[in-house]
Length: 366
Ligand SMILES: [Mn+2]
Image (cartoon, rainbow, N blue to C red):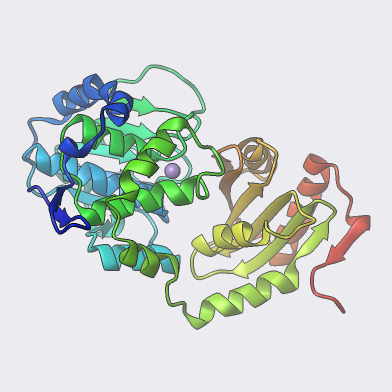
């Protein structure tokens, strides 16, 4: 169904593809064949599962929701969006609530019940995807670097040069002439905004173009509620712990959060403390469900993904990501907490060429 808004003169403004300017059309026209290929791979189907990575971020949630709209546009009645773990960050929980997005945790979904499975913002068998490996895969839409570029039997559109999967999905929707309601525009815009850190990292001209186009369709009041959410007490306790444990190893800031109520907090702290002026890198670790989750962020270097992989390799886990933001996880295997912290400091010394003999605490008097 086409949705409408009024412009400043009180006239209805269409949010459908008729709005696209000739110039913006150029960027999505190349997606027509891609979308057609996806349609052929998925249809006919009466049940489709859209799966994204564990502990989902705004980009994968928005992408999944965009694909949900596309499938509905193609006549599939009730696609299901699912993911492992849960939504932890206050912003992301608020996003689901105020935009009315319907999602189901993987624990209540039986993937084999679905005729088709589409993965967004993740790749089969990646470390951050809990979907059983025996589950079918019909399509993958992603922008994370792939471990290998072998050809696949499923529809596979992986574009590393694009800053957000939400950009790819926006292009799909436009190419398919699928109307984009205000709430979906808000989600996609927020997905692009967060994955590119407001157009400052991993950004391509397509991201910028979609960002501009979506901007006019966003419900800015709802967006503001998402970006400035209410927070629980746990958040402030965690902030206190993060600052208290923060070690400044010259240009690298490292903190171990201990047990966290959601792995999202680890990424959140890595983002937040990167603004400390003396730092080039932040690395944050924490323990969740007997695994060590960690995040790596960089200001200038483009090697965060490689560093996350190196850490994973050294500590027998899995990791990877983009040029300036990356993450991984390592099995705890009964390792005591202080050993976890010690191992991270050793790896940081080796991989970043810094020394613990030149370490400062963030909080004075410690
Ligand atoms: Mn993404």
